[in-house]
Amino acid sequence: MAKTNYLAKKNLTIMKPGAEKKDLLLGHLGEINRKSMQLCDAEIVHGAMPGKSLVTNAIAHIGYLYTLTMSLQDYFEAVTPAKVKGKLTKMQIYLCFEDGVARQGLPTSPPIANLAAAAMDKALQKCLDKTGEKIVYTRYADHLTFSFDNPDLIPLLPHQIGENTTRCGFKVNPDLTRLQCSTSGRRIICGIGTGQHDIFPTRKTKRRLRAARHQHHQQEARGLEEWIKLKPPKKKELRGDLLQEEQIINEMRKLWKLPPVDIKKAWAQKVIPEQALGDSVFITNDPVLFMGMSTLTTGWKNCMKVPDGFYGHGVIAWLELPGTSIGALFSRRTTRIGKVERRQMRARCLLHLLRDGTRVYDKMYGNPEDIPLLVKKIEAAGYLPITDVAPGLYVEGSIPARLPVPFLDNLAKEFLMLDKKPRHLFLTKKNTAPEEQQRNTRE
Image (tube, rainbow, N blue to C red; front, side, top):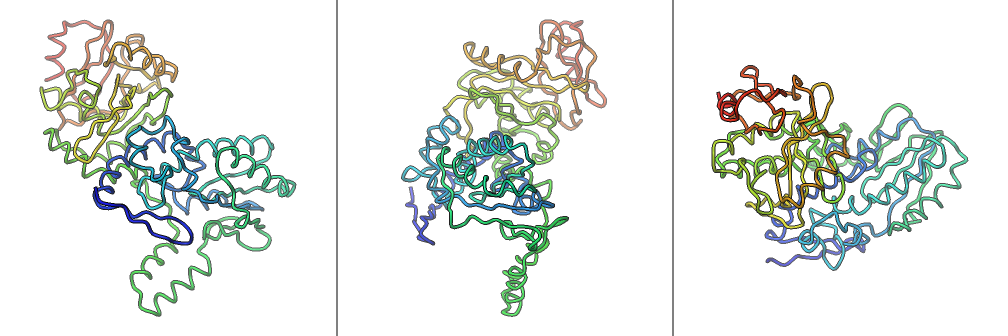
């Protein structure tokens, strides 16, 4: 493996991974980003979070009288494997940490740092809630921002914030702590002017733009012109990890001879949010897991195995059905397909959101000893067995006519049927023989 170069910059150790190491890390980046989205508070975290940016970070603080800004000292060097224990696999920890820390410069370090700081974010928010005052807290990487209106909080907050960050294994840099008041002008939050009704580019940024234009630095000028617009990320950027993996996922789809699919659109249309349920159980909309739902396992197989069989091609239909997601209990072991790597599923089921808001889970697959834990976690999250729901209810969304029909499990009491037009799934009584039912769904 190519050696990793170390760069010295402002007393920080910044790593420049070789091409081979970088490709290896990028193979894990999608899953690490998903874990970050699942386990971090999206209202607080604005750095290395899809759909968030410095702009959304500043917008959250519009209209407040006081803003306290603080920075964490040696942020990435404080991110150790102990802080992400149980959140990353052993292989990910082995690959993504150098000298026992998440070095700046590695593509995986920003989302890993978010995972490591999740406990601190939770502790700080709990501390702020105890004051009984309205205080907005956001974090962009190592930059902490607190906005409020009550001046009585000014002498209290720095001490309380410092205590909680230290307790969680981080440390505030006292030299970079600053209190700003809106009566003295616009508050500057991570380089963005923030007022009572809007956000603005700073004078410093405008001067840099004039200088770049004057010196004919066209690339820098174009970048600054775009930055000055202060546009929030577009909706299509909400799945940053998916955009990074889209080409790889399409290569896997072609390898498995699966039908074409607009992966970004399919993921964006999902109505069941991704969620961590604890004990390595997750609700996920990951396209890779949909396509390999019987291949990326700890050894058990079912009818969805690709590329074998007609029903293997139907996994794309589940991916494109908005009301269907996957509930999975993950192993610590991983499977690598090309540049994509995923934790293996010890057990899994399909989850369906019905149009009346009922949430149900379908047939369980996996290791017999693992299925009870998955059932327990899924039911605790509010999902009912599909056999306990009255017939006649439809699953949210429909299956595009261009896709093969997915396999529909025959259950003890009720099971899903498919309308020919417009191909909606709905619950029905078991009133036909299994062979006849399967023939009807293929028509």
